[in-house]
Image 1 (cartoon, rainbow, N blue to C red):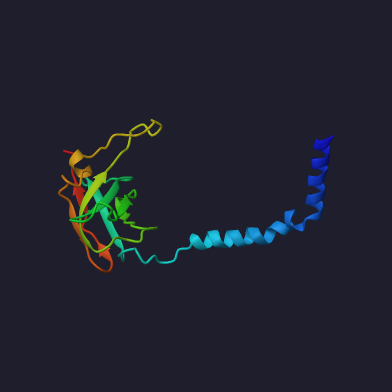
Image 2 (cartoon, helix red, strand yellow):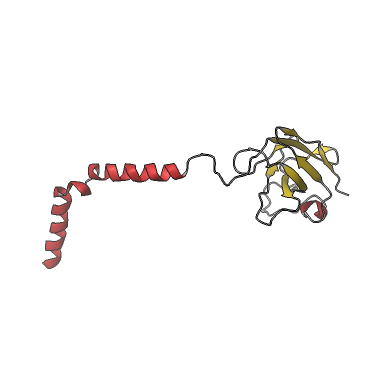
Length: 163
């Protein structure tokens, strides 16, 4: 009996209190969405370094390495420094991303690492082994180096061998 009273009270309140109706929630919901979307805007962040477009090509045994990952590691930089990266296309070309969508890389000197993980059986579960020698995946052992200058950068092809 008491339970029925509280249930009916809740129903009555929902019908009479406009703030609990769907139309009464529209304004607060819209305000909340505006605040959330403002936080997701693509405005320039003051703490980001300036980046410059970088294009390159990765060849392994003089052939493109589609899907290979390329990462630039700043020389003499703090551990939390940006690490621009890119993924090789079917023709071996890549563009680097530091913050978002192939925006490029900050100017400076870098050690380049590359990993190319694939399997002859495309349905095989990963992770697949790296097809490149291990020194190319280690910034302390890689001998690949590039310099990014202010302005657009077209890198010389990075030519690796699997031997």
